[in-house]
Length: 505
Image (cartoon, rainbow, N blue to C red; front, side, top):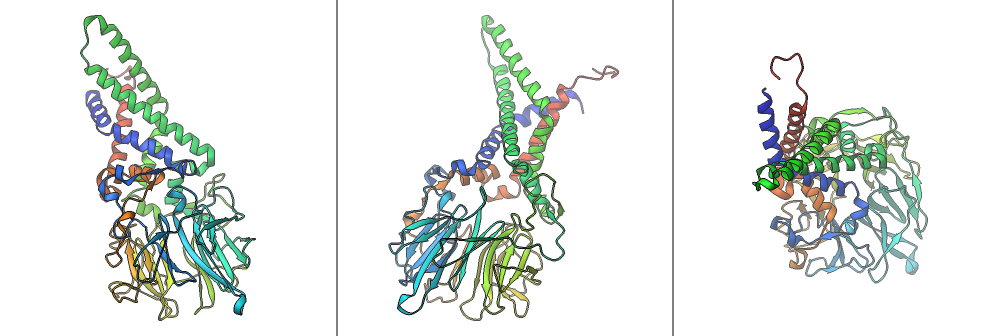
């Protein structure tokens, strides 16, 4: 390809996608520092209308918990709300929780009972990614300390009798009344454990820099700033060249062009390997590349956060006790496992014939009120799982469940479920989808514009959904990533000095 053709490609690819690349870089820096911005919210009125919460979509209803006074607590992406069993009205139950929508994304709720007779007591707990909270008699939340590691994220909470179990992405935390002290339990490695990790997760951590800890995150932030400088200097050079000036200002314009080109050229050439790495790993994290990555396993890179003595590091998602089977079971990124009868001395064994779960993880895992089967809901759909017969069927079609989860988002992206609220005479429960929500449960209008966390806004921008909607999940990042890679390559081509032995210089 002629140098003039490379120049045209570099120019127009850079002009068209320069703005989007700057947005990707700024949003990427924000995503890398979630704790720092967790208390900052963005009004949904500033976002496209599709970001209004309607019919309990966007994870607003993840699950419910029946309180001791007969009322129902609804928890999800905006905290906890209190209603009755027919959802006649809703009031906020977020007093005592930290400020910021990101801090109030509740992963689960559980109630425990202890004591006997008139001295019996009930306690209710809720868990977000950042902390465990207990409610008092006035429905006010109080933080409960856990012996977690730095920035360890919590994923679930459940109970059996007077035993409270909190799950993080790496450990199990167990306590009994009065629930002041928790014991951290590390689950032993299962039989056949080979230490390999998901290639998708490895590329994800490499893209963000988290693979190498704080140092890696800072390096990726610096690369993002470099990409911003490259985009800004490139666009400024093009605009400056287009400006017509008087004869007396031509020398000043020439100096400005020379300075901009020098910065653009030197920074671009010196950092080409790092900028290409960020762009390539970014578009690999979206379809179609993410599917083969998610299905592939590789050894953990030594010296990284994935190289851990804990076989379950960053793999745990949800935990429940199965009364029929008489064991604790846990949902992980590696599938379902039985932990045995004693949660404090777990012996993990893989559960075969489990229903398919999206790579995004489970959102629903609870027993049916009648029949004792398990409801398993994720972005791959909802399935009814009978552990006794090792069979799974589709909740909606009643057909046998597929063997694999397929694409990250299936036809029915289930984000929540409740059977504590009875509307329209339905006693079999209400399924809530992430995008569509549910038409069976009326949502108060004042919830439409509940604030959205800055981190989630950055995620929407980084994935491209902020610009063109959900179709961006499948095409936008892929196209923009490949365009960025080609723009960098053509830039290197036109700035390389011609070979002295070449006939054409």
